[in-house]
Length: 151
Image 1 (cartoon, rainbow, N blue to C red):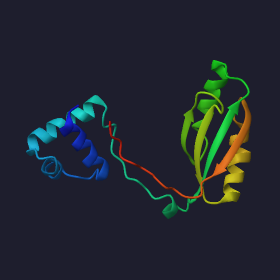
Image 2: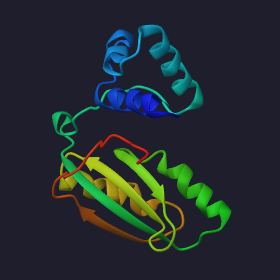
Image 3: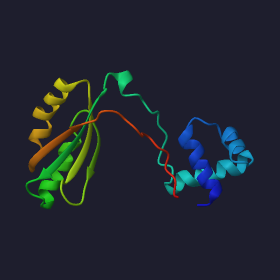
Image 4: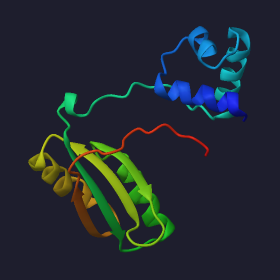
């Protein structure tokens, strides 16, 4: 990956709806080489896909919680069952397995505190192998959807 590829990635992260012609102009290439580079970035997996960034508040999902989970048991079967069950938790936006304590970090969006409490009681508290759950409520987003760069 060279500086031109990095520029292509930066431009697409700012506006994923650019045409190849617009992209080529922004990175100082003609359309054909820009298109070849774009296809190679897609083929290599550097670009995994394209999506719209949807505003959670516009959908009425303005209540955000970060959930820290410590597991009681961390054998392969329990971890597999826990991670499989996570895929069924509604409003779960991200789930990350961590080194150290806690074991998992979840990002959850709901409509309000009452909806989060229902989600907690009906889904999070019933996940297999969970010893302890701690929630932190997000006051506001300071940095979100920052474009990725290698340097």
